[in-house]
Image (cartoon, rainbow, N blue to C red; front, side):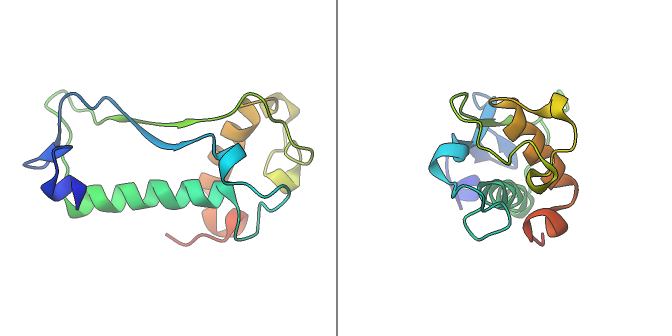
Length: 125
């Protein structure tokens, strides 16, 4: 509704002042139940749902790329303070220890879950 009738977008284009859209702030702190990567309290599933919802809203509002061929960037503000046990493992979708550490581990986890949302977090777009 906001993309159709609000000031964020008009006539199928985002307002030119919108450069970045934040999907969620610190989901690893605010939307997480430790160890529940496959459960209903899965912050990765919440993010994939948010991203899918945004893409569907853009589609419904017929949002087009700007004349420069771009759309606003998407971001997630990850915490740097947390590194839960189990994140850096296949159960956390991470198979390479180089992809692990505060903040970067969550980014890698989100990336890998996006590659196969059904099998990782049980999300069907």
